[in-house]
Length: 213
Figure 1 (tube, one colour):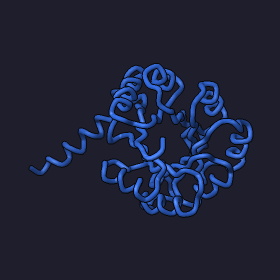
Figure 2: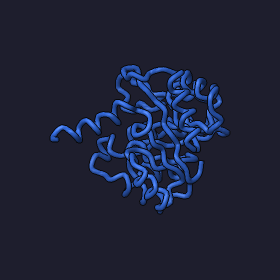
Figure 3: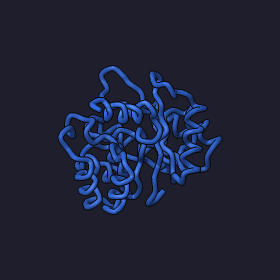
Figure 4: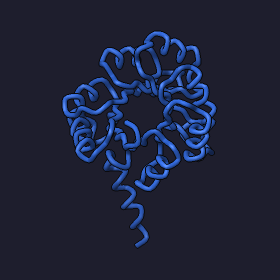
């Protein structure tokens, strides 16, 4: 997956493209365009995508629980399901919102599985490397209380300077120019989602831009 674009193919239940079949075709289109990997949500979507592409997959399961802030692969139930689905890389919330003991237990339970830490600050990424994560992604920069005033490029730079594991640029790297700059800085690869696979978000940018014409 090095030095390329990983396309995130996700659609939640309240979105018009919510369908494992549609996500599999999104992944196929991404592969045809030259993507080096896919990020996908739910075992159902992942299995459908595996039937269409032969790219590495970063798998997650988004799940909301009462009294748990983390929602990206937040408990062992989701981790176990993804391991059983034979995922190349499993991503989970590794911010300070997630319990450190849980993260340690996940990595200890599955020593042969590759894990990616979705973080929101450089300090969280540095902790994730110490805990044994194989990849670190800037996925949640700006989406947590502790990162709401941070710049994704600044966090990316700090992680690249302080960590030895591959750092993935993810989260609002939403133009080709930003993706290129991230790779120039030393990002292992760039994950792009909404800017490619969420037409309602793409259309809204156009519609907002022409309102004053």
